[in-house]
Image (cartoon, rainbow, N blue to C red):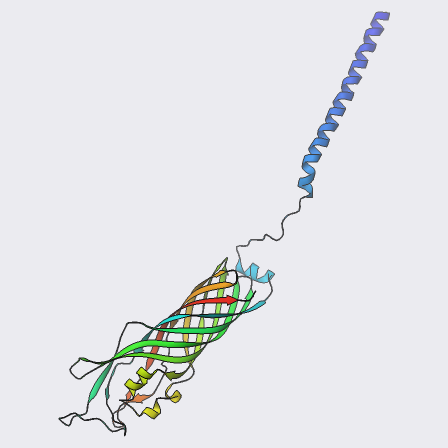
Length: 276
């Protein structure tokens, strides 16, 4: 009987010890798991990283920001004339006659090649989200070429023209990372032609007419472009499409006037700096 009680006592003691060991093991395991999970629970999400597929959402969450900058670069321009046959006139405005007593006429035609100029300007940019608007004011040379032919079709004169103008582009665009796409109207105020163009035209009108009043002001063209930004620097390539003639004047004798209409297309490569 004593042996039986002793065996029962030893069995119960062993069961109690195993439960204590198991409980302690479970507790340590839970502590270990908590030590691993705790940093994950305390880690906060990076709220500064926010990506969206919607430009509209990006626009709503941002505010308008303003920056100013400067730009400058080279231009390549091309003239488009209304091709006409025009009487040559003298300093008095009367037609010039050849040795046979006939009025000397020359034909103005287009030359599709580009001519070089330059442009500079101030940039005012208003940004909100991925959208921005960018009014500018600048100076540009509207370069191009046209040809004047003799009666027999031979080349009489090739004119490398340049027109000085004040430009006011009103651009809107979309930014994507370091790239941007933009477009908009540009208002031009032409006021002066270069000496080569003036010398050629004065054979067909009085020189006194070839001043700032010769040009129609203002006119509106259209501009589209693509740009890239690197910190404070930017580069852009623009195409300006001529929509209106820079002049509505006539050339030739008073009894046979011919319209002189001139449109200009231009490609502008710019480098600039923005204050950020």
